[in-house]
Image (cartoon, rainbow, N blue to C red; front, top):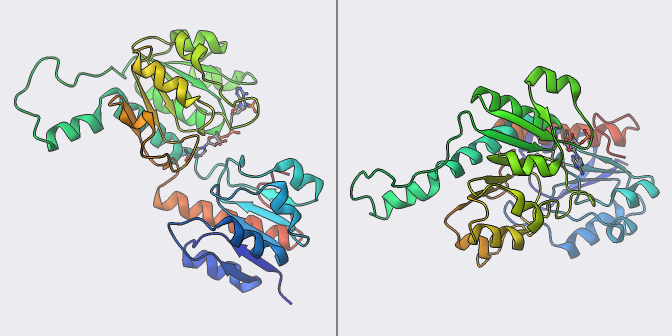
Length: 320
Ligand code: NAP
């Protein structure tokens, strides 16, 4: 009898075919709706492997319903949706998909930085709604990017890829990280600073850490109050690292100039969220890694991790 695998969303057919060759699979077949919790709880009961996305909360309670489960393969680099401690205790392997999405996520982060600094969405809306009557000197003016100071919090794979892009714009790069990255500092000519200095000195503050107990509310009222009035906050890491209520007040009071957000405390963000009422907030729906090639690579890697774990071989990327 083939091992059983549950896939929580329809991934491209070639990936399904690959998994299906080796395992008995069941799939939550709706593209735009996550699998309801009660369905997942029923489906997980007899499976050996779970292929899931960040939209699924794989907590202790769920893992306890799955006596046969050997592997949880997450199609993402971040794994804050999974209770790693519980998985480890139960001897369940957890895998993720780092690396293949680094450049694409850095591209989106820089695109969001540029869109926010130069008010692209607001300008496009201005034109389309018929407000453009003439060219005028200070109309829709934004902040300069070229030569500005960028502060990157979290100098891992994506942080470093973002720093490289910033160097292309002759930016002064500051970073803060849990550990120093001496060789990267030299290669990219960037400076390690304490968090408060980074916040005080940067024109752009970009968050690139994982979401962990240490990074919850890392950027709250105090941190925002240290930033320049002309500065811009970009978060493409995870919602919850920035306190959204504090961010709203800082933007509303003009303590910082603007924010570009790909990730939110609750996803999807509610349409009546106060942040969505502000013109100086650019929001996109968690599309950091959303290029066709990268999403294919992530799905392939997640499938490979799953296959290897269920064949008792070492997966390419093991979290625990
Ligand atoms: P990574 O290579 O593991 O880098 C994370 C970096 O954050 C590491 O350098 C780590 O420091 C640092 N860090 C961790 N905790 C910290 C803390 N408390 N204070 C300061 N620095 C801390 O991960 P990555 O591949 O670059 O991805 C980073 C995150 O981006 C992911 O966890 C994910 O949540 C997010 N992401 C979002 C999207 C999207 O679609 N928006 C796409 C991909 C990834 P050490 O070097 O000391 O470990």
